[in-house]
Amino acid sequence: MRRLAFVLVFVLACSHQSDDQKLIKAASPVKSWAASLAFASELWLDNRVPKSLMENSVESAKKAIDATRKEVGKSKASESLRKNISSALDELSDSASTLGAAVRNHDANIAAREAKRCHGIYDKLEALEQ
Amino acid sequence: MKKATQLALGILTSVGGFFDVGNIATSAQAGASFRFQLIWALVLATILVIFLVEMSGRFAAVSQKALPDAIREHLGFGFWFIPFIILTLTHLLILGAEIGGISFALQLVTGIKYSWFAMPVALLVWLFLWRSKFNTIENSTSLLGLITLCFVVAAIAHHPPLREVAAGALPSLPTRDPAKYWFIAVSLLGSVLAPYLFYFYSSGAIEDKWDETYVGVNRAIAFIGMSFGALIALGALVVSGVVLGSRGIEVDDYQQAALMLTRAFPYWGFVLFAAAMGIACLGAALEVSLSMAYATAQTFGWNWGEDLKPSKDARFSLVYTAAIFLSALIIAFGVDPLKLTLLTMAINAAVLPFVTLPFLLLMNDEKLLHKQKNGWFSNAVVVFVTLLSLVLAVVSIPLAVAGGS
Figure (cartoon, each protein chain N blue to C red):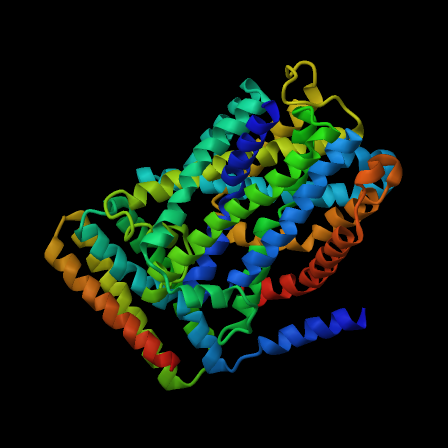
């Protein structure tokens, strides 16, 4: 029983993180969604995925952005980190909305532009992890 | 000749029947988050599942009893009742995850939210069970399930770095996010070592009227079938690592996983993923439903058999009917199918001691198994699985809180 308790304590200790690390981890689904939107847009432009996947992906990305915004609000991480993440969230939210409209209107040029923008947001969030 | 046909069919059905929503979710997440680093968990789980499936088939063929039947008769109802309740609740969650998988596959194709499909899917699964015989279910869905071989073809098409893939087969410590790493490792083990598989396999052996002469056939099916099945899961993990992991996409939603075949199969990869997911989950949903009905009927000593008319085993039919519609409610209420799947796979690993402990006792009963009782090596494997499961049970729950969301 003591050994099992030790394993439990060890695992919980391993998962201990600083406030900055916790916030970066909380933002990782958004980073992943930025990459997903970029990739899915490229595939949509190539007619490899349907419009509905794009629309549902945009919706899911926005949910992830909202969830991360709440985490930023609660976080005790450094101000600069919170500011950088908030700015990336705003940018991705705007890009996702524009992308959603571009898909609805079958506007390939805007979709291609937003795919590149999502790539850029991913890179920004990735840089915060370094 | 009959045995050769059964062997071939058994291997095919094991390949098709191995892969389900748990394998899709955990392999996709493992590959996307840690590339090939978690292959070892899949390899370990495959070795263990080969032993456990072989034992459950051997037990049924020699003793002419399915597992819960024998546990009740030889170890007593009191011994079995609590594990039975725990396993039944776990199976309800697994069935919910499988129905969620089919519903999500339909969402991918139609764009309509998955929760709307939960009840129609439940009706389809129920109708299939109500109208079909055991062999029809076993063979048709499992043969259709061979569509999941597309993950293997895709993995080969991507020419993954073989040295890195081979290195992944050796256990290693995570370089980042240890909570997530261990949670996915636990889920991968749980997805392969699903308790329903053993109850379904042993009851299926009774339905197929196996006797002691099938011990060799059983061994071959367990080894070859499970190995090829694991190859599909490995294919999915590798494709996910190459396509999603390299782009920084983690699988937090099945929509992200659905992109993984679009590079290897440019114009139909997306539809192929939806078809593979839908068919694999349909096969598994049928197996889990039947497994629950088998376990319940055998625990209470009721009539059972998918080949009997529902009027001849009304309580057996009632169990799968209730299970299907109760599980579908979880998805109909909008629970995220991927989160449900990952959590359920970790629970699978946690409840394994309830499967392996009675199993170990029965497999060493000379009165039941005569010459075919377990040798020291098989016992050592079961003890290892039990200890591993016990540790996983303690570790997986805090990990689910810390890193599994």
